[in-house]
Amino acid sequence: MKFWQVDSFTEQPFTGNPAVVVVLTCDISDKQKQQIAMEMNVSESAFVLLENGESEIRWFTPNSEVNLCGHATLAVAHILWSEGFVTDPTIRLKSKSGTLIVRKEDHTYTLDFPRQDPSEKPEYAERIKSILGIAPNYIGSNGEEEVS
Image (tube, one colour):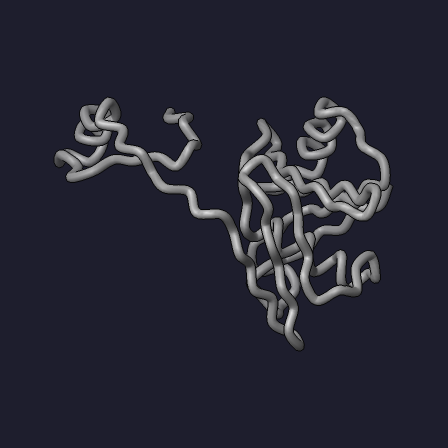
């Protein structure tokens, strides 16, 4: 199993958004993915499974799995191209949020993610008001429901 730590959104080492990229040729358990993410201890560890000509991506924080992460997807695409896992200028990654597409043109990457419309969550209005001291005009969620 190979892994890399990539700083997204920067050209300088030790800046940007760090993400761990783990490239798998056979799947491992969710428990193992979670343990690796805990050990790596960055905001997201991305696991990309390359199997039968298809690519599947999942993201884990040190505490739990998340449904989508932009900077870690960017890190995965960079590793897949720079390490020679993929040569095509378009990468399609199957995820729990749908198919994610990353395109490479020269040194520019373009990410195309499925649209996730929010749904209104008025049940959080009182909590937000107690924290901010003002009532919100709108509270919505696109699927990440945990509020603490």
